[in-house]
Length: 244
Image (cartoon, rainbow, N blue to C red; front, side, top):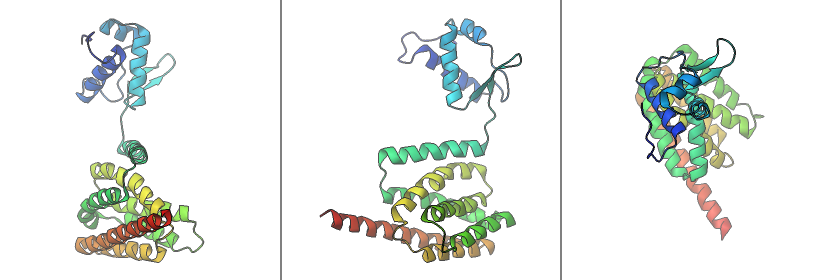
C-alpha cells in the first residue's frame, strides 16, 4: 500500500488503518505474526518510529499485542465476545456520562434491546441461567444489602437473562445496555424505588422464563419498564420543585 502524502491523516494512522483492513479481510490471521518493524518500515517507506506509533494505535484498539524476546513481535489478537462486551460496556458508559443522555432515552434503549432477547431466552434458557437469576433474587432479598450491592445484583440478574438467549452477538450488543445504561438508571432511581417491587418483577421474569412463556416474560419486563420510567419522572419532578 502506498501512503497518501495529501491525506489529513498522518502516516502512522494510515499504516494502522491498512493493517486493520488486512486483519478484517483475513489477510492477516488471528494469532499470526505481523512483519517486523523494519520490514513494515521498508514496505511503507517510513521510519521505524512511525511504524511503532501505528502499532501502538492497533494495540490500543486491542487488535494486536506485542511480545518481547527472541520469539516476540506483534501478533494479531483473537478477540472473544467476552472481551468485546467489556470494551463496549466501557465505551457506552463513557458516551452516556460525557454526553448527558437523558433518563428516558437510556430507559427506552435499554428495555427495547432487552425485549429482543426474551423469546430466545425463554426458548433456550438452561438450568445455570435460571440458577444465576434466582441467586441474584435471593441476594436482593437480604435486608442488609447495601444500595450499591443491590444495584450490582440488579445488573447481574439482567446479564444472566441476556445470556440465557444463547446468542453471543445479541449479548455483545446488549452489553452496553445492561452494563452501562442500567447502572445509570439505578444511580438515578435507587433512592426512591421499592426493592420489593423490583424483586417481584425479577421473580415474575424468572417464573416466565422457567415456564418458557415469552408472553408472560414480555409482560413482566413491560411492567418493570413502566415502573422505572414512572420513578424517573417522579424524581425529576421532585428535583424541579426543590430547585425553585
